[in-house]
Amino acid sequence: MLLIDPVRMLPSLLVPLIGVLFVGGFSPRSYAWAAAGVVGTVLVAVIRWATFTYEIVGDRLETKRSLISRSIRTIPLERIRGVDISTPPMHRLLGLAVMKIDTGASGGKEEAKFDGVTLAEAERLKPILLRRAGRQEVPEAAAAPAEPQEQSIIAVPRGWLLYGPLSGAYLLTPFAFAGGAVGLAFQWGGDLGLGQDAALSAGEWLWGHPYLLLAAALLLVLAMPVTGGLMYAVFNWNFQLKRRDGYLVAERGLINRRSVSLESRRVRGYDIVDGLAERWAGVVRVWAIVTGLGDSETRGQLLPDVPRAVAYQVTADAIGPFRADLRPHPRVARKRRLFRAIFPWLMTALVALAGAWVSGLTLWWVLLVLALVLAALGIPLGLDRYASLGHGYDGARLSMRSGSLRRTQAVFERRAVVGWRMRQTWFQRRAGVLTLIAGVGAGKGGYAAVDVSKAQAAAFPAEVTPEWLSPFADEPPKS
Image (tube, rainbow, N blue to C red; front, side, top):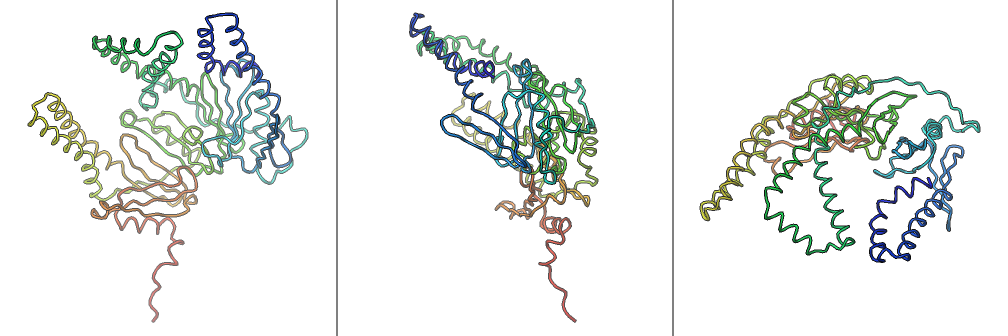
């Protein structure tokens, strides 16, 4: 850690150190100050390493930091929801790992973090920390825990990494790199003697050569699928989903290898997600719906982009199948989707037509044509949004689906439902529909069936949880 911490802090210190050297004119004093900064980072690393300890005491984990004041954090083992082990590049070279402990009590932030334990120590601690009530005592000789039983559910073939750009999650990577480069240039500009005048001159020169800006934008657009696919492959390389000792374990990553464990008995269902491009290619992504899981968008991923049939088979084997057809929503829901997809662009076209009539500027005509094209595209988009609506119940699990550009189908167990909520906007009241939300003690906390009829909103909760509504039913008349 005395090597890792200074190297990790180096990027944030690089600009200040170069600034010290430039301001000091590369004199012996400036070199001395730069050296003092490097020594300071090493001292900080020493303090972090020397003042942190951890200990398993009975049924709890204690972490301690003691420099000027002493800080002790106690985490009951029964509260631990997951353990995330990752190996960044430098850690991997040195045989170390980063272990994050999640209790679900801190939102997306881990409850405790062991940065720099050996990989063997992380693997030793993992089964101990994931134990539950009924096995309270931790033996002194816990260095050799029982070998966990492991069963492979799926190993994603590397050829399926080609589906990565379809998700769109990493397509903006070239623009992020370009923005970072511009920001770095502005940061270094002052240290290198390039002030605001130089930046304005460069901007005026580029404005006078618009074809260069167009070429740069075109290159960034062409680079989107390539760089997006590479980033997707780096993060999801050799993705494996396993069942190990009562946990679902997802392992992935090329540079930073990551292993995430989800307790099977706390998994309540799954989200199947696809976008338009993924739907055309027949692939989907899958996330787990887990009680008490922080950072579920990252830690809860069960599958990257895989063929739809494979996703259904894996979720059925790992969690459980959904054995019912989704029920369609009323036709008024289709009218609402079409109206919302078309009307804004028609209003934009009307404004553009008025502007073109008054001013005659070409820009208004361009806006008019663009708005009309988008309004026309809104027709299939609205129809697809309606076709994506649906909800169902198979006696054991519920499912609710909505969306088009990003369509999500949630499948969760009946026992996960903790309440029902009905929501109706003014426009929904006029249309005679409403939104039915199933409160779930896992995942997002609630999943919605959008624009259902009043009959469906009354019948569906009565079908899923009849015992909740029976006390409020009218008693039969006495004879």
